[in-house]
Each structure stands twice: as C-alpha cells, then as structure tokens.
Image (cartoon, rainbow, N blue to C red; front, side):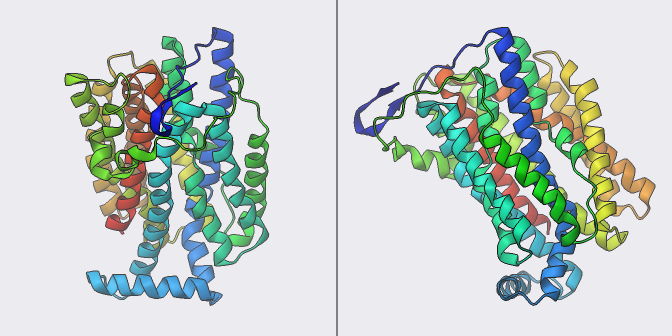
Length: 410
C-alpha cells in the first residue's frame, strides 16, 4: 500500500482468488447480505403499527417529530387526515435512513480501496449493533437507532469484494447474490401484530448481526494498518455532490479512469439506476401503508405479503436472472423496467386482492432483475483499484434515490 503526497493513497489491486477461495468468499458475503436484508425488511411490515403505537404512547420525541411532519404537510398542501400523515411520517423515516447511506456509501468504498475491504467492512458491521438497542426498549428513541444503522450498511463493500474476483463465474454470482433482495425478503419472518410481537425476531436479528462481527472473511488477508489517518478527502465533493455522483467524478478523477465512450456509458447506467430506484423506493415505502389503509392488513398479513414478494424474486433470480448471459443484461433491464408500468397501475388502482397480487408479481419480477443486472454491468468499469469507488458511487446514487423517493411518493 503506497501513500502519495497530501495524505492520498495508492489503491490496492484486487486480490485474485483461486476457485475454492472464490466460493468461500461468495458464500460469506451472501450470508452477510442475507442478514443485512433480513434486518432491514423486518421493519417494513411493522412500520405502520409502530408509528401508531408511539403516537398512542405520547412519546415526547415522537410528538416533536409529528409536529414537524404536520408543519411540512400543511406547507405542501397535504390534507389534514391521519392516513396521509402516517404515510408522510413513514416516508420521512425512510428518507433519513437512505440519507445516511448516501453520505456513507461512497466514502466507505473509496477508503476500502486504500485500506482494504476487511477492516472497513468490520467497521461498518459494528454499527449494526444499533438493532440490539431496539430489543431492549420500545421508545421512539430506540426505534430511531435502527434508522441510524443506515450509516453502517456495507452492501457496496460486498459488491466491491465480489467485483474483485476475476473469474466470469464469480461475476455471474455477484450479479444475482450481491443484490439478492428476494432472498432476504423470503427469509423475513411473518411478524406478529405490534412492536411487542417483533421483539423476539429483533433479538434474533441482533444476535445474527453480532455474529457477523467475528465471522472470518476468507480469502481476504488483513492488511497492515495505514501509516496515517488522513486520506484523500479532498475528493469529498466528488463523493457527496449529487451532480458529481451522477457524473462519476470520483472515478473520472482517479487513477486509470474509464475514458471516452466507456465513461459516458457508465454515467448513463448510473442515471438509469438512480431513476429506477427513485420510483421503486417510492412504492416500497408506501406499499405497507397502502395495504394497511385500503385492505386493513395487519402486521402478520403485511409479513405474508413481503414473503410473497421475496419468494417471487428469489424464484426469478434463481431461474431467470442467473441464466442471463454476459452482454444480455441491458436488454433484460429494459424488459423489466417496462413491466413496472402495469405493475404500478395495478397496485395503485387495484381494489381487490387478485389485482394487487398481479401487480406485486410484475413488481417483483422487475425488482429481481434490474438492480442485479445494472450492478453487474457497472462492476466492469474502472481500473482494478477503483472497484470500491465505482460500486460505492453507484450505491450512493441508489441511496440518494431512496432518500428522495419515499418523500415524493408520500
């Protein structure tokens, strides 16, 4: 590891794995992603009931947040009805979670290019201990601790680790596994109605997250500690400015950047990724409120709905997405995005469960294909030492889209 003038660093080239080691790395990364997704999706079906519970408990912190949401709703002309207010509150929670990811993802990716994947991944995982706080208290303060965990999500590091693997088979596994949201949704427990019913599952998730802190990441030997804590944060504007992220400026200004048509293609892929997740996250965060208000779904029924979505996504990823040949990802993305149009119409206008189910089926197909395929294509851009920066920038674009999508949709 070399350090240049001004505290910048020379990125490490990726470690080329032997086939057996590649399999072990993919397995460990997959298990880590599964636990991350399980911890996140546990919250979605509980969110409407949790907010109602905190409101009835007259929690002071919740009350102050509620007054802020009321003011914002009045400012933008939202009708003063409880059902609209709760959706807006849920959108605010989702936006804060994603805002923290937006700030953190590109920085962790760039730092991991300098210090190595393992130490930065372990640092991110330590923040997942906030889930344990939720298990000990039902106050709104404790609930916000799960939102703060957004700063600790290490999914971009997981994709960077898999992007470091050089064999085509590893790249195919990365496409399906690194964004295997369906697997996390499939394993999400159908939780009971209300916060107390969720505590045993929260304890389980907290324990599994703690287990990850001591899980060895095979094939990635630890690097020596950096001789300085000062990294090249002069590029912070490239990592945090939305316009710079869309232009992949941190990648363009790095060593051995893609040039010409390849850089233009990378920017177009980033824009498509951003717009897709902007629409996707708007539906994702409002879906539980829509079914709660229109169909009177309980938390248990919400859990079953997300289980259906996850099972569908897992099936599509296992039978269709993983069979997409290299070079066919973009065509698959186009077909999947077209399916979002009828999916959104059916979910938004449907007044019966069969219509809702058909809409969710189309929605699940698109979700199972678009992000994994785009991630696989983007991972091929940039020099070997830039994989963390490339994937961190992509993840930050996704977090920015998820920050804006829930509030706009709400």
